[in-house]
Figure 1 (cartoon, rainbow, N blue to C red):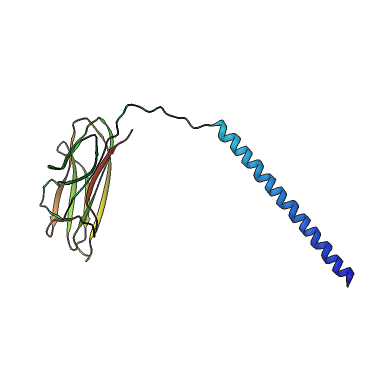
Figure 2 (cartoon, rainbow, N blue to C red; figure 1 turned 90 degrees about the vertical axis):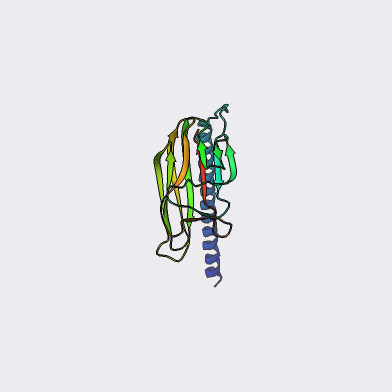
Length: 188
């Protein structure tokens, strides 16, 4: 019995010794990989770009309340939360590009249950983007967001206008359902 017991202990010692060697080899390999990774990382340092004198250009505006609109109405987002570049006018809904550049423009529109309408992004009188918000066959609010990337020239006039509507043409914007909004920013 003691021989069997000693053999079991001896086998256990070999297992632990082998396991310990394996763990040591894994740890050594991980350390070497980390050293190699650090060496390669330091060979390719991040390139820093000196700051330029360019100004940030961005805006974000929302409707402060539900708004009833009809076909071809300009949507006047009357609550300005951001206007870097001073391009948006909350009295008429018009954004005037303060600089020539590539811009990202996005708008989110929410409609009442059993309604639908189309909104249009207009630049200098030309339709450059559309969004269709449709909850006609559901008993729930519906929200859509459109994103457009455009090259704009300084002084271009941009706004969101209503297209065809069904129902009351009410754009929902409140702290319960969500805020309909219009945003944009210049890409550097």
